[in-house]
Image 1 (cartoon, rainbow over the protein chains, first blue to last red):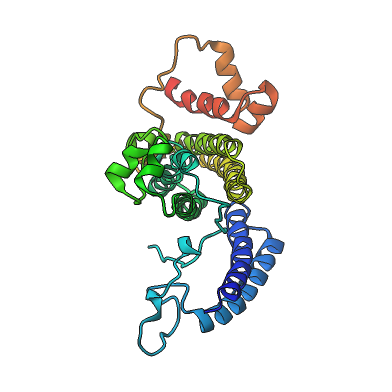
Image 2 (spheres, each protein chain N blue to C red):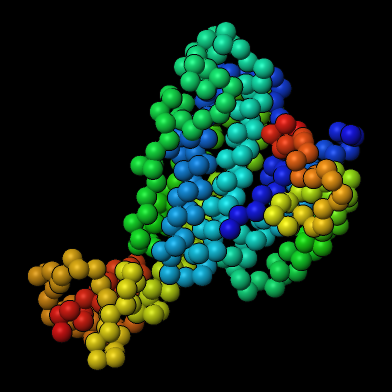
Length: 86
Length: 255
């Protein structure tokens, strides 16, 4: 397990997802801002790519079906490290 | 419903374990102005909000606060990593060890357990959004206290992020409050959980105790008949929107 690589890739996801969270909150109170919607979609696009790459190597980030198809046993969701251990 | 993402919203690192500081940080886990209070307050209030914007904002910020609670948990976890009973004694936090060992628990910095008394939901959207804004300010102040209480640069970075988020949340709640006020004025009814109709017509609904006070005089009635619109009353008489709306609504009682 390449810890440094995992941290670096996760860091990228954290940054881009933060952009999405921030724009989500902004759009909640400024629903007519088309520029913000475009920015949000750019973030979603980048986030999708980063997540796909991360999950391919380090397992699913989301549970309950949102993490996509599971690989063959063993069930990857169980795998650490868990966020408070990283 | 909630889906869990296996990552923190923002990285949490510490330079070294520090139980004395962990004992302070725990207030943002289970204290009055901490992230558990924030998330439960917002997620609970959203059920009685009248506009989609308010429901969305409370849902989204409430959800983000759960993520912040996780960050605080991770911070305390790292600050107490490998700690023994002796370490807890030295930090003056041995009560925590006796009751919880290395487990986390929802208390404030003085060991007072979390309580639903820390949060409110009055069902009045203006009241509840005001409480939310106050809550964000209190959380911001608490983060300032915590940032001042440590030399750990990594911990400070995490706390500064959380501090910034409180400021942004305050802004969003303010915007939501303004929107709810406008909504209440435009639809010319004060939403208090139910609409009232008589003979198929929507009556104005005001809280029961808004009885017309005896001080209202003829000049006041003139004011009402001349300015039927709250916005115009605001501009000309420098009233707040709430006062203007209240006066306009009371007009119906006087009639």
